[in-house]
Structure formats: structure tokens, C-alpha cells
Image 1 (cartoon, rainbow, N blue to C red):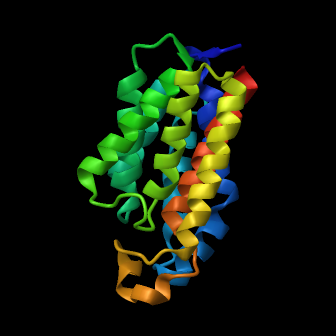
Image 2: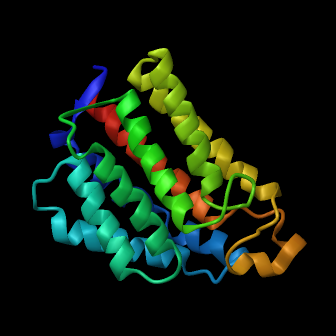
Image 3: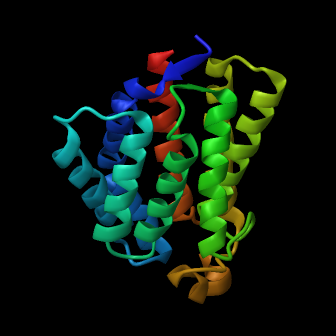
Length: 212
């Protein structure tokens, strides 16, 4: 299929939750190298809170994104709560009227999340943040939508772009957040936000793949 039903999106959200839960310790390790080490714990808290509240409820893909975004925005500590909350809620708003979601639709939703993020943070590609993961993923998906690429192939391309974006942060110097104080010493380590963003986008793609 070239689309999935928005109403069928619950398992996609639960897959995103599992992706964060399974990588809680890893995200803590990555963050601990140049940050304060609580990224995995905070993200796990937010995603698990969502799971606890909504696992027995019915919700659409966009409703789930909105609810998860609100929990992250309002209930987890650190800078990443508002950042991910904004991305997910803006994604949800961009897609809330869709019954069917295709490649171009998902690209528009992700782009809305990126644009919302760029309104609240100054970071851009090359600054060693999750923008380095999200932005290339949006670009690849938009191009796939314009080219009429098969949805499954487009999702695989997005996953590859997210991973390449995450890996690109290793050679960068941090310009934002706690790790920016380290200057050159922040080079040689992955950015924790870019890493968690890759996990979330990969899990989202895998969840959608199972619906197609």
C-alpha cells in the first residue's frame, strides 16, 4: 500500500515507546560522555508515562503524537521535553485532518515538526544537535514524495538518512546545551539528542512499515 490509515496508528506510537525504553541505558551513556547523563532516563520517563496512560485506549497516529508531545512538553525535565514536545505536537497538528497518510503527507508532518523546533531553538544543521538527524530525514522524505517513491522504500531511505545524520554529529563541536562548554572536547562523541531522534524516527518508520 502507498498509504496507511491515520486511525490505525496506535502500534506505531507503541513501537516508538519501545525504541526509547530499549535504549534508555544507551542514551544515558551517550549523554554522560559530554552531557549530564540523564537523557535516557528523562526520555524513558516521558514515553513510559504515555504508554501507561494510553496503552488501553484507542487513538490515531496524530492523536498519539499529540498526547505524547504534551506529556514530553509538560512532564519531563531538561531541555529535551519542550523540544520533542514541540516536534511531535506540530507534526500532529499538520496531519490531524488526514484519514490516509502517504509519503508526502508524512514529509509535511515531519517538516512541520522541524519548523516548529527551529522557532524555539537557534540550532541548525552542523551544530551537533537532533537537527542533524531530523533535517536530512525531512529532506529525503520530501524528495521521495515529489518523486513518487514507494512508501516502503521512502521509509528505508529516511531511516538511512537519520542514521547518517546521527553519525555526522560525532565529528562536530557542540554549540548548544551543556556540552557546548566543552568546546573541542565535545568532538568525537555522538550527540545524545541526535541519537534519540534517530531511535524515534527509526521506530516510527518500522511501525509504519508494518501497517503498509
